[in-house]
Amino acid sequence: MKTFPAWMLVKNMFEHELSGSPLDILFGSIFDKATVKMNYYYKRGVNDFLEAALKYISSTLDDEAAMLGIQLMQNQRNNILSRGRAMLDAFKSTPAFGLLRPKTRLIVIDDLVGIYVQPDFYDGENIYEVKTFDPRGVNYVKYQVRLFQLGYPGSKAILVGFDKATNKPIILTIDPINEMDKNEILRHALSYGLINGIDEEPRNHIIVKYSTKGST
View 1 (tube, rainbow, N blue to C red):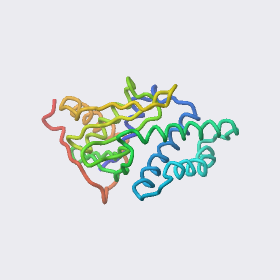
View 2: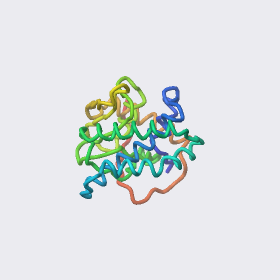
View 3: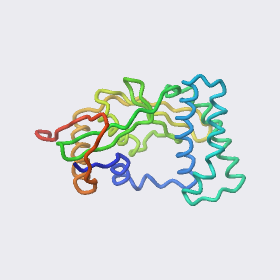
View 4: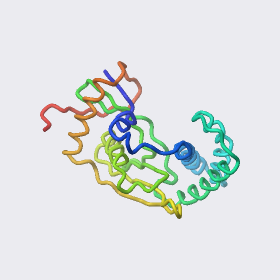
């Protein structure tokens, strides 16, 4: 079977939209990990879960920056920590707060191609994806969410973003994927995976199977 992670297909189709600055990429990565940590601390009953998440950001920020080839100036570091505090505090008021990140699932198409998908959070019914920006009108975000919904049949998606000026949360609800979108994405993914996937026999994943035979 040929397998690949979902982000590869998203990048292939929407590379023109994925052009953030190195600092934007750094903040997105560190904030993603911090939300997972904060939710984990909250579920474990840690009283100062926000401060614990901020401490995590502070302790790993320089290493994260170095991996991206960034040498942070002190004012840049301070700005990231300040923005991180404001957005984590705002994140507490969103429906994604308190949820845990699910294990990776594998979407199998025609027993030929597999796509690894992992939304940010899952509550047993809906999937959640968190962005550090306003996601309205951003095509790659919707496509990414649709890919994730294939791994969670029948699920709605709750998309969480933030206003750039105020850091206030923006919450969007995306209905379950319809047949037309599903079939189109499956065909794209199958074609892409047959060429770009790696040969692998997947193990220990929840598998969701689809067939493109007979779809139009």
